[in-house]
Image 1 (tube, rainbow, N blue to C red):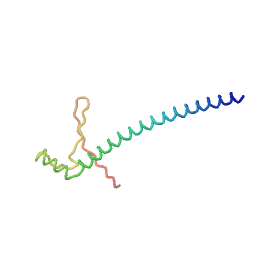
Image 2 (cartoon, one colour):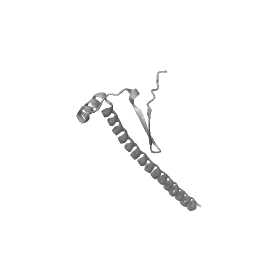
Image 3 (cartoon, one colour):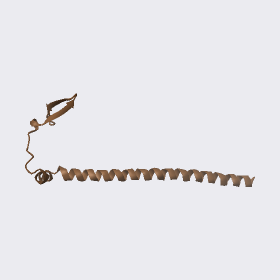
Image 4 (cartoon, rainbow, N blue to C red):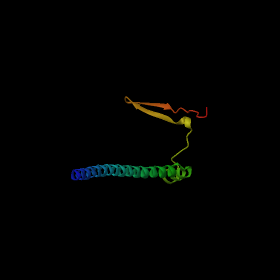
Length: 103
């Protein structure tokens, strides 16, 4: 009787250990995948931040204008900007609508 009990205990321990090992392996794979995704997203976030910081500064935009466009660019009023709509082989233009966000 003791022999059967010992064998069943050993067998159950082996099965439990196998189950735990497989579960841990799956969790490790998921964790690795998540870390890779986070790493990719962090890299993309850093690139977007760099682009935003670099291009959104007015000084940089003015320096680019001077460097690449010389005097080809002119300042326009927001009311002069139009939206071009290409539908059914027709060109339609609409003025940009200004929405006051303070109201």
